[in-house]
Length: 341
Image 1: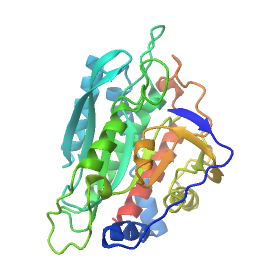
Image 2 (image 1 turned 90 degrees about the horizontal axis):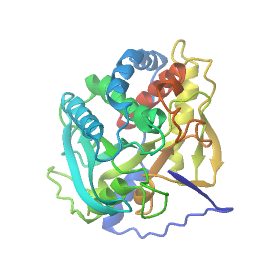
Image 3 (image 1 turned 90 degrees about the vertical axis):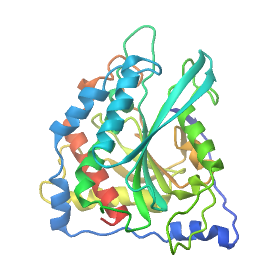
Image 4 (image 1 turned 135 degrees about the vertical axis):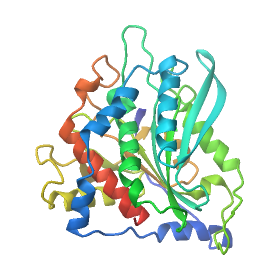
């Protein structure tokens, strides 16, 4: 990811109420579910740092594009989600890079493929390659991958056995987020740029009866894309970025406040993670190719990058267990509320 700053960052949206735009109207009307304190407590109790450690055992390894570890991590993610009943797909492609032609593999896992809408959780699973040291990328982005797998695992018993509703959970693990040399618009975000372009050109064929939605492409099926990056170090603070959908982002500080009132849900030593502060910082990351195509996005990344960013010290030693516990609980409740489980 890369940061650019603008003194003012304004977004203007112009639209007309044609039948084709009904989908966007329905998106804006989405209402998440509220839970009692007892229900929140039960969701919090699903946190198991041992399970997350097990995911990290497989993912928090050097995994640059094209390496054997990279292939092993991709297979681990795929098989883990297939065992939970997700329909998984390797979206493979080749692209010219500053280091020659490379093969890339995005991983897409969907709980109920026939559901019209998708709540998308996303992260990147590749790690950057450095010539002078071995880079693990525990925060960047092994831990976000583990958090997504944990959400899928812990919420699986609550998921309907079939697509009874018009929305489902989709997990996307992007390949090729990192630059091979120096970050620019062509040497970065290979996987997300490819997938956003692909889905924008894939026509959606609705296979559900009695549907009144007017979806034109696979991209239209994304209700919101929530991107996780650089998470797990102690002291992280996440702001409401200008590229965020404000209504969706506001659920995160709201949930954090709710859970802080439920005994045993959050570790109070961590402090507040999610801020209401609106930041006009624009961080170049895997959400941007989707944001540029008018997909609602939420970017969960620390405003100040962790001190271990792109150093040899971004190992599992940089991860803070109480912070991970809190993040896992908040993300789990967010998904449950948004999907109305």
